[in-house]
Each structure stands twice: as C-alpha cells, then as structure tokens.
Image 1: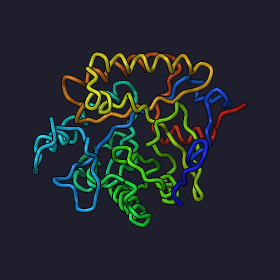
Image 2: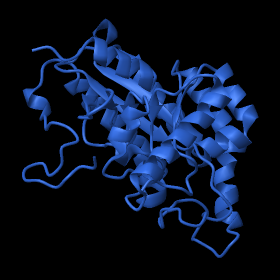
Image 3: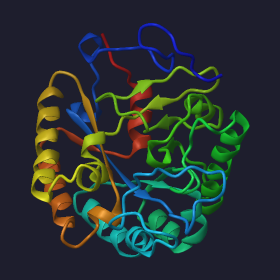
Image 4: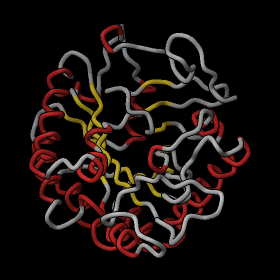
Length: 305
C-alpha cells in the first residue's frame, strides 16, 4: 500500500530517529567513517518513450535542444566510453571498490562494460530501466512492480546474480517504492538523503535499509545543477569528510558519495575526485566498502545502547 499522509512526520516509511538519541554504531576495526562510492552508469534514450517520465532538469549538454539532442546524448555517453575507466582507476588507486548503479539498458547494450565491472570486483546495484524512464507516482502499482522486475531481471541476466541494492534514476520514487523494492528482494536503497547512518524502512514484506547518499556532494547536484566550481567542490568533499570523521569518533558515520563518469570522469575534473579520496583514505579509521558490505555489517552489528 502507498504511504498515506498523516500528522507528525507525515508518512510511515520509517520511524523518526534523531541521531543524538541512538545507540552507538561501530564499523569494522572501530572505524569512524564507512566510505562508499556509488558510480552511476545510466543510458539516455534518443527520445523519451511514450507514457514515461524524464526529469525536465536532466543534466548534460548545455541546454535542452530539439530531437535529437546530440549534445546531451553524446555528453552522457562519454561516461560509458571514457569516463568510467578513469573513475575506476582512481577508486582502485585508493583501495575503494566501486558500487555501480547500472540500469537495464546499459546492462543490455554495453556487455563489455558489464564484463569490465565484474572483472574489477565492482558491486552492481539496480538503477531502473533508463534515465529516460524515471519512477513516478503516475505509474500504477502493477506498472511500477513490472518496471522494478524488468530492471532486476536485466541485471541478473547480465551479471549472473541478483542485485542487493537500488538507486532510482534521478532518485525517483513513488509513494510505494520502498515496499515494492523489498517485495522484489532488494535489501538496501540509496534514494533517501536524510541521514549519516543506515536505518531500516518499514515494509510489510521483506526487509530493507536506507543507505543515505550525501545529496549535496553528488557531483551532478553540485557542479551541474548548482554550478559549484571545481575548487569549491573539492573543498566541500574534504570538509564534509572531516566533519563526519570528527563526529564518527563518538558514533560511526557513513559517507556515501554519488558520482557520474560523464561529469567527474572528464580529464580536467578527475583530479578533484583523486585528491579528495586521497585526503579521506589517508586517515586512520576509515572503512572503504561497497553498499552491500555496509548494509550487511549494519544488520549484523546494529547500534548498541
């Protein structure tokens, strides 16, 4: 059933929990911060299929142009052809295994990329069908259930295993998405951006955690949407980590960074990611992990006290 409006927090997806009232969360080896990097690989279709929804503010290119918008299409495909390899090289340099949000059309149309990701030990999570088909409340429950099923089947076929995690295209959800994801066997979802620790979502069937992304540190949200310049973005990444590292001494934090190879993988931007990650992993007490590893640890070792 979709969430209904109500007094208080206004929805029943999770129990409100201010971080100051929680027990203490400890990561492996008593790390202060669990660091997860989600790399986004999503296919942009030539034209938005009839009946589907695409964000009007979708980044890429310069401004939206009439069909076919070659500037935006080719700008985004740069990530699949060039940027992804730069990003993975930087993550590998710093001992970080990527969590890759992969949509169904990328899985089907770029088999070389799938093999490459698996060969580098990446965790692959669900990311819908394409960026041109965003989950939205105009879908019926059955349409959304079929959409999720189509996406997961495509990844299972391409990779040989069912994904554990999910990130909706453009963070898109309807009022019923967490329930349908849990029903489909997804164990964690990254669409919610409201915390610095994982937390359980309330679902009638299955079990699912929210693994919150730091939305304002999303490279597209910062540099493409809000026009933050590269120097300031680099400082944001480092200052954000430093604050969480200090807070993590008392209660563990999770820092989930969300990056897009078509943007951060550009030759003049990749140094920003390289420098920031180097700054983070040089500190003692940082656990670099995949989304699935973090969700699994949290389930086995929930906050105490």
